Image 1 (cartoon, helix red, strand yellow):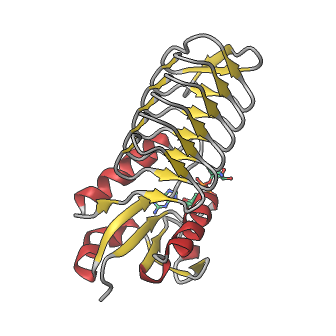
Image 2: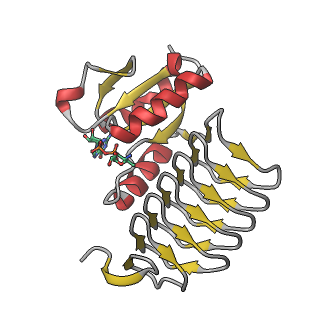
Length: 218
Ligand code: JB2
């Protein structure tokens, strides 16, 4: 029986980043991984046992696991991340909050359940981060930003002050969003883009300055 154990959902690239942070936080000894790929069952992810698939979720709580992280992070994975989050909550687990020891969080910032603030990320004053959000390595979320559920801010992306980001948005690596702009639900901002105007829901924008190139999901 594990006391106060952590369930990682997913065993791919993003999960390795999360697992490494769990080691640094001293949580890895009481962690287990679930992954959809049967080939991974019985293997280890940075030393953490991959016990099986999501069919094990309903019995995790009775085995002493209390918290979970959705450790699938890819650009196409927003709906999947939401489904996995809800399945784990349904199974009686609580979404954890992951703050990498080398991240910086302002005292007045708020982190939603299940959020992950990874190495070198900065969340500044009065920013509000939603549920199940990934603030990836070196990303900057400036003062008074508001980030909706299931958003992924990729490495080195920078949101200037007062930016509002809807649900299930992907902000690509190294992108910059200028002050006070709004990014609509399920929009995708390409890597390296510089966004100088609001982005409508489900738009895909890229370039400098960023322009719409298609709709997300199309
Ligand atoms: O329903 C599922 C499920 N679907 C896929 N349940 C569980 N428990 N696991 C699932 N998976 C598993 O997620 C796959 O079997 C696979 O092992 C893993 C996804 O791994 P992958 O490396 O393809 O993606 P990722 O989301 O971990 O990482 C991507 O996104 C990161 C943000 C990569 O592009 C990374 O390079 C990137 N940094």
